[in-house]
Amino acid sequence: MEQTFENKIKNDENTLLPHDFYSLHQLILDRKISFSKRLVQIADFLLATPSYTIAFGKITEIAQAAEVQPSALVRFAKSLGYSGFSELQSIFRDHASRFWPDYSERIENINHQDLSNEVTTQKKLLSSFIESSHQSLNILEHNINYKHLDKMIDMLANAETICFIGTERVYSIVMYMTYIFRRAGIKCEYADDAGGLARNQIELLSKKDAILTISYTPYASKTLDLVFFAKDLGIPIAAITDSSFSPLVHKANTWLEITESNYSGFRSLTATFAIVSMLAIAINTKRKK
Image (cartoon, rainbow, N blue to C red):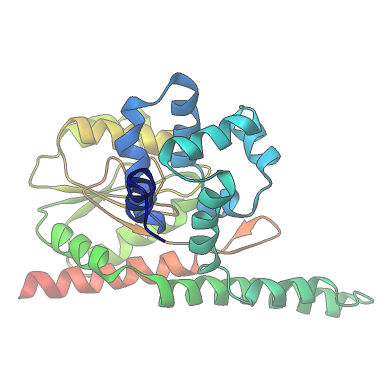
């Protein structure tokens, strides 16, 4: 059947609609300036919320978290050109499903084991944490963006000094980075805010230096504050975070998305340790060349 002119336009628009996660991210950023106040609120929520939260949540739950009515989410999706929120959510779901292999089921099976004695309990706990670490490493192995990784290595290898920014749950990672980067002969420092001097440390950096920051949801306010401050000074920023919608992404010159699994609220940092270890050696090798 011959298409009408109106249907052809509609079909052409549909072919241009993003159906992958990263293109959707860019579309929301591009359209945000034209949104109403309520739609901007939804856009900000989507840009700051991990993809798996939106991917597997009910529309009523997502609306409540975004402090809007479910109908507003539908209106937001339609403003982008989608048929409704379900179509928009399917993009989040497709993306998030790549990050959650069958390790989740294994952990769930461990949770239902008989806990009749202390030894069984200890084995269950250890097995659960091991499976959580396995899951993090599996996600890293199959989903790392090597283009982004190469860009990060190039930028940090060209920096005179690398300043680390990371607080709260990633504090141990930042301390390890300081150790391993120095062992690799890379000039670096940690903006530790001792005496409230982190901003002063950053002010001493130049555009020939670089920031390497890490933060996972819920994003530490102190980390965001220091990164935004560094961005205003024009210092190059490399970020490791858990979502392309992370507020760090909008400030970073280059970034990596790392998804860490968790067990009973305790998030594995196994994948992050692997990445920062690799970065230290790769940067050292790049500089020697």
